[in-house]
Image (cartoon, rainbow, N blue to C red; front, side, top):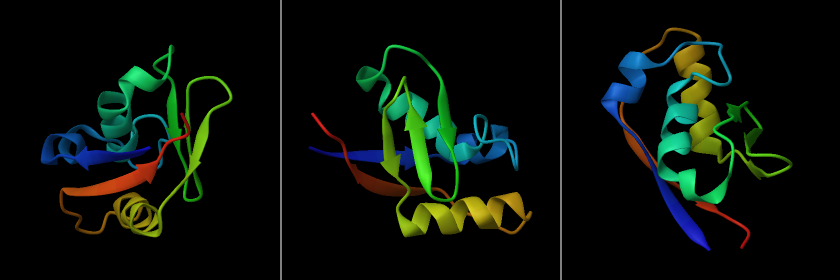
Length: 87
């Protein structure tokens, strides 16, 4: 099933660079996919989005680019991305 995750400007403003659990994408995943996991732990790397226990998604290329830019202190904008979530 495809799901949309929206990274808001608030996620960017409140996110922390180089923090896999507090970056803007992790904040957005925690909010937009909250119904998919029992625990609030979300970790985002350049290659993988981990959510819950033993559940993960491959990080889409635009998301990996966003994370890289954000971590390097470069300008980023709010955006949406889709992920294929196993049922």
